[in-house]
Structures are given as structure tokens and as C-alpha cells.
Length: 505
Image 1 (cartoon, rainbow, N blue to C red):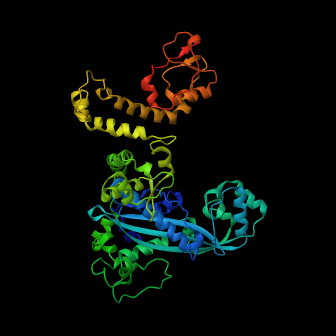
Image 2 (cartoon, rainbow, N blue to C red):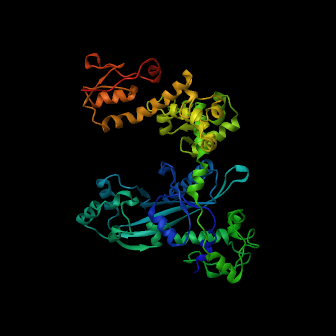
């Protein structure tokens, strides 16, 4: 197969597709490419008006998608992918980029604009080669675009609305999918059909040939509009001597050294390319590395990084380091790790909280999980560090974890101090604020006249969902001693009060 040597160049490498599109995945799988899918979190908010052409916008979006995944995987997993592929497909007519429709009326507006006319489908593709010498991520980007001209037939309103009511237009750029029902709208296609589906496989393979098989000096150049690179591009080349004089090597220096490999000659080389390569258990490797991500979150929370970057504040690493009294280098690494985990945004101006960090990771946020994070860092992390001893000896590991003895296996000496108790209660309080509405509405509490051990958030939610529920302090045995109270605002209150009790009617 002509394409086998090209795709074969990527066998054994960690290739990542930065897209959740099932259509792109299917195209690449059918081509024989082995890859893993890591959808990009890049927010497609680039200003379209700032780009000279629609395809320039598509290329930049594809590049940012791929780079976001490359940086996130490097920081979170500490396992740099070798190649990340990003792609973005757009529909344009008269230089205007048509978005995905937001509702059926918008879909009708878009499809009416395309009705009976020719439009362009552009796909921008970015191939990012990654390496991490000395633990620092380095990337080289190769980018290109493909344009396909598509002409719609003259369609009646009835047919357009029938297609819109099918639901297919709603998640597709330009409001149609040519590979499915949308194909009935199309009269002719000039160019790469798969480009309209979502990925220009033909151009992708030609680009791989340029990257991994640069032309030799004096070699006859084929016409640019050849459909597929000539057979001699694949079969009559080795990596030897191909790294300096050809046009491909001049445009992308170092790619062959980073991604290429010596090509075996004759049948042995062909068999090596076609042999089965065992899959790499990335899920297990990610599980093994997850503790690093957790510790990065714990450390940033303990240093109150998310408090500093709340409410739209943007600070660089030096600013944050000065406020938390830490080194600039170490702070920069920590901030990059949090950005890779999706907890912070990183721009040229500096770092800022994501919406999730503002809501859940600031210490006094409405739905703050800061207490949970601190409890896991100060208590749970230490205990699980000594899990092997607990399993082997069947003993409580408080002495190893906290330097304190416990009387029994299930007694926790670390909660004997007021500070430790308060830390635990803050963690419980934070979780309760999130889960209380769901818990209160999940059970039938109408047969009770009072409530116990609810804590502040759960008591409030219970009172809201069960209007006559009485929340009482102390071990009262009759409803005459029960009275309705507003729940406490925080865990400090719980240290000063006895548990509450549920009293059946």
C-alpha cells in the first residue's frame, strides 16, 4: 500500500488527536493511524475579524487546540506526547465564516444563505512535534489548510425545514453534514471530499511525506497538484542524507531528527512497518501519575494561589511569588502545572483563575472545596503514604503519619486537637454545601419532626425542602422542646454544640 510507509512512520510513537470529532477519528483509523484522543480545552474565542482570510483563522484555531493539549499533557502527565494533531473545519461564503447554528431558526438562516450557491469548506491542520529535553516542553509546528468548493442545489423551504427538524445541523459548522443526511443538499463537490467531512487525509499524508522524506538535492519535483505523493517518494528514500538540502528540511529544521527513524531496506523494512505493535496502556500510566496532579492542586491551595487570582485578577509568576513568599522559578512551574490541569488560564499578561477555580478553590467561595483540599493534603495524603505498613501490619499508622499514637485501629489520634477537628469539619462543611440539596430532596423526611447531625448546609436545605421540619439542639424526646432555628454558617459553630436528633412523629 502506497500510504503504508507514511503512516508507518508514526507507528510506535505517541500520537494524540486533539479533537473529540468522531468523523476525524474514523478517517484516521481507516487510514491505519494509531492514536489516542485528548479533546482540546481551547476556547474558540479568536477574533475572526483580525484574520486576513477564513483559512488563516482555521489554521490558528487548529494550532492553538494542538498546543493546548501538548502543554496540558506535558504538565499533567509529565509524559510528553511525540505528535499532537489539531484540526478545525469551517464553512465560509463570500469571506464570511458561518458558525454552528445555535437553534433551528439560526440553522434555517445559515442553510438559506448556502442554498443554490457555491461555498468553501476550509480545514486548518496543525501537526505539533513535541520533545522535552531537561523536562522543558519544546514544540515545532507544521501547519497547512485545505479548501474544498461545495455547491448546494436549489432547495425548497420544505426540504430545508425537513432537514433542520432531523436535528443533524445543530452540531456542524455551516449547518450540514455531507457524510449523512446533509449529502442530499449537495449538488457537486470540487476538491477533497474528506476535507468536507472534517479531515483532509490526502493533504495530511503529503505533509507527512514532506516531513519524514524531504526531497534530495537535484531530485525531480512533482507538480504541487499531484493527488498523492509519487511512489518513489516513499520507496526510494531513506533518512540518510535527507536532513539538510531539500526544501522540506529547510522549512522545518529538526523534525526529521525529532520524529524520523532509520528506514530498513528491502522486505525486512516493509515487514517491520506492517508488524503488530502492542498498545501502550495510557490509562494505567495516567493513573500512576495522577498523584502528581493532586499534589500540585494541594500545594497551590495551601499557598492561597487561587485567592490571589480571584475576580479576574491577572498576575505573572514574579507577582505571585512575591505575595506567597516563594521562588519565582518554583512558582512559575506550579502555575504552569495548574494551567495544564485546567485550573488557571495562562495568557501573555499572566495567570488568572478559571470559573471552576473561582467557584470551588478560593478559600471563602460560595461553594468552596478549599477545606476538602486542605484535609486531603494534611491528613489523607499522610495516611496513604504509609498504606503498605497498614496492610502488612494491620495497625493504625497515626504514629508514622503524625507522630502520635492511637488507642485502637479505628481511633484517629490526629483529631484530638481543636485545629485538626476544625479542619475536618471545614472539609465536611464544604462537601455538604455541594451535596446538601441533593441529599435533602432524596429522602422522605415528612415523618420526622426534628433533625439531628445535619450540620449547617444540610439543615438549611432540609428546611427549604420540608417546610415543617423542626431542627432542634440537644437530645430532646418530645416535640414540645423542638424549635426551628436557622442553620449555622460554618463549621466553627459545630465545635460548640451537641449533635441534633431526629424525632419520629
